[in-house]
Amino acid sequence: MKDKCLNCGIESDDVLLLSCNYKGEMLYVCIKCLPVLIHGAH
Ligand SMILES: [Zn+2]
Image 1 (tube, rainbow, N blue to C red):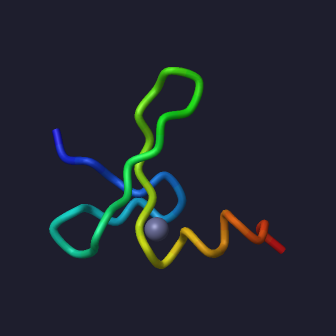
Image 2: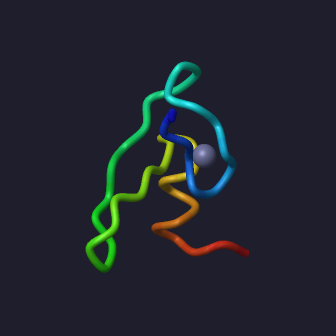
């Protein structure tokens, strides 16, 4: 099972994914979506 960005669903083959631990669960977000998550979706 490949890791996917929680926001856009891109796989780690295509972009750098960053891992996040949220409520004991490992989530992944790509570097493209990270700023969106930090600043909040519009
Ligand atoms: Zn993404």
